[in-house]
Amino acid sequence: ATSSSSMALSALEQMSRLGPISTMEANKAMSAAGRGGDVATVRRMFDAMRGVGEGTAIPSLRNVKASTVTYGAAIRFFGGAGDTKAALEAMGQLENSGDLTPDAIAYATAITACRTRQHLEDARALLARAESCKLADV
Image (cartoon, rainbow, N blue to C red; front, side, top):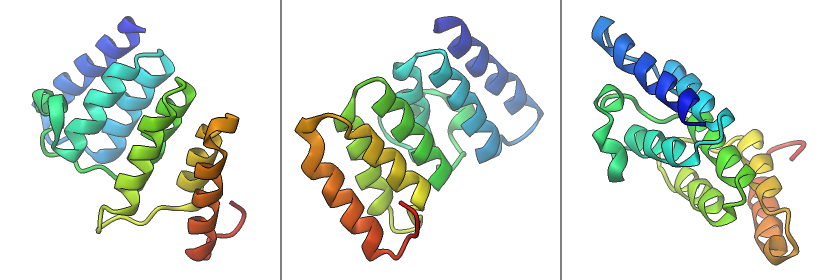
């Protein structure tokens, strides 16, 4: 896990020397860290792209703005790691961001994160919110 994350962060640092990093490039690096199982690094990168928390310590991501795809990836990795609370928090932040609009993929990913009986009501609430946004096929 650490190897993938180290490589992703190193690549971002090298790329930042050549110019601004795009959100797409940052999302790819965050996905590499997530595929490696390093949820802590995903959290730091996600926070950096939102300008909050310990993530601000990642200078190469200082000017990268999180997108709906960024949030969806974070939701997927948090949920996949069994951290349903973090996945739901990320979904709530996306819904309340003011400048981004959750898509069907983000809602479906958040609903999937609620795979245990304990989060059934959360899943129902997400589905209702997705339906109220008139998103098809959630």
